[in-house]
Image (tube, rainbow, N blue to C red):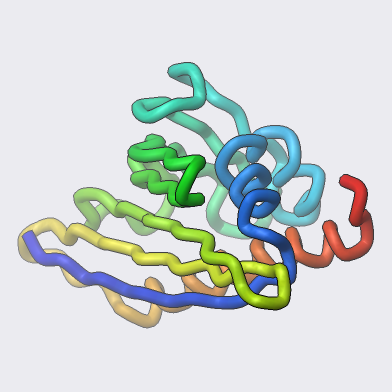
Amino acid sequence: MGLITFENEFSVAVPPAKLFKVYCLETDTLIPKILPQAITSSEIIEGNGGPGTIRKVTFVEGKGLTYVKQKIETIDEENFAYSFSLVESNVWMEGVEKVIFEHKFVPTPEGGSICKRTSKYYIKDGAEIKEDQIKKDGKKTEGLFKAVEAYFLANPDA
């Protein structure tokens, strides 16, 4: 089995505690509200929201990707760290054994956050995955955080 690791980080003008709460703890309610043009729903289908929980995210039609199932691996509220594995998807999973996404939200002096994300793609023997696709997925995640940022800048009391 091969491993492709991709690391990226980006700044978000939202404090780590608030960003962690939206992305890690209240995903099911807030993310579809913030990104209705991309995400139809997010729901826990197994578990209680802690490690081991399975979440299904359903995307709007016409985007190619219709759903993903994520397994929460770790939640560290004290250090604003969160990881999940992608366990099922309707696209590109045939060559991938599993994918683990690790996130850490670090405060900036200006009161915002730096999101540090590590993506680990475990590739099945003999399969080929293009690193361009992985980088493209990272850009989509950055777009999600920028949408969260825009939401909170427009709704500071939310």
